[in-house]
Amino acid sequence: MAPPEGGRKCSSLLTFAAKIACIDFPWIRLVLLWIVVIICSLVHQFASLADSYLNNTNNVLNAYFAEWSWAWTSIPTAIFVLLTSYVYTMGTVRDMLKHQIRIIIGTVLWGVWVGLFLGVRQWTVSCSDRSFGTNSTACEEAGHRWEGYDISGHTFLLSFCIFFITSELSVLLQWDSIPELLEKLGTVRLHSEQPSDVTNELTQDGAHTDDAQAAASSLEWFYRLTPFLWPLFCLLVLLTLLWGFLLVVTALYFHTVGEKLIGLFCGTLSWWMTYEVWYKRAFPGRPGIGPLGLDGTHMYSAPKPGQIDLASIGPSYGGTESRIREE
Image (cartoon, rainbow, N blue to C red; front, side, top):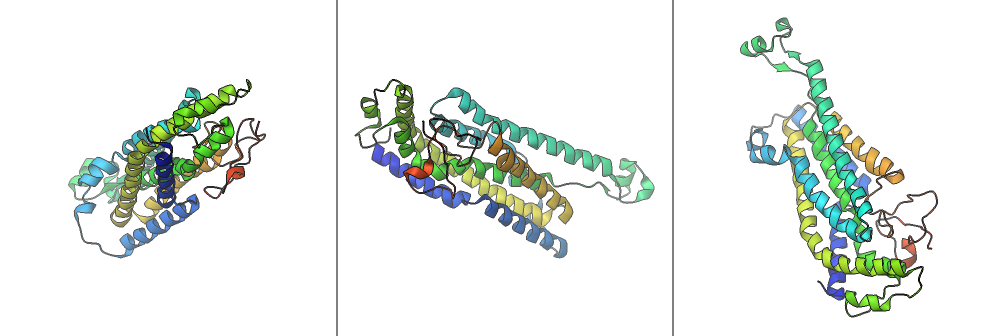
């Protein structure tokens, strides 16, 4: 286990890296993504790009990463959420499982949209030479194209994966504030030599003993787990960069402008309706929701007892403040 000082430095560096990688304001990510896709789509529309390895659909990046991008995204993200939620839910198993439901919802959205895209293509499919009617074999044997309106599933999924990863990584924007939050919640004294020693400093007030013990345990697990978050964080950031690169490749070489923009709209809508609307108001909640208030939003019409006013212990993190009543 990392010592307190080493653990604090590790968490501070992790928060600093997260602020760079995630871009603190999600709407900046959204606007940048739209600008890049629109520009690359227009280049594809009006410029003649030479064939390359990247526009071969059998290339390694497409076959093993783009086609499996949701698996590459959801599995390490689920592990990341499991480890981080153990700390910010203070080890409450039910709440930890609740945070995993966002992964399931994302998977359902992926399946529903892909099914709809395939349905649209089937409903609109026809031969480029209308005289062949619905005979796809004769159409292709005659050298014509059998095609429909093919909404870009890659543009949808890659953009949604980028939004999904960066939204889940947002808990790290306040990660270095957790020791102070736990101190305030459980009267844990951070100046002790080892995190395990904090149990000797717990309040003896019977009404608060359980909270204090949970806070002490969470602080110890905070120091234990933070070093393991680094490789997961690096992997997820690398995946985000890879999805961004493949999104550029898709916009430059494949589909029409309309097909790509519809795919991007569906990816953006899926993220916005879940992370910016649904999860802010209802179950399962945003990343970081729990007694420490790492989600940084007003999740309840009446603040829950025992939760913490993040602004009362220092500067606001992530551009937001959590104003929650103490018990």
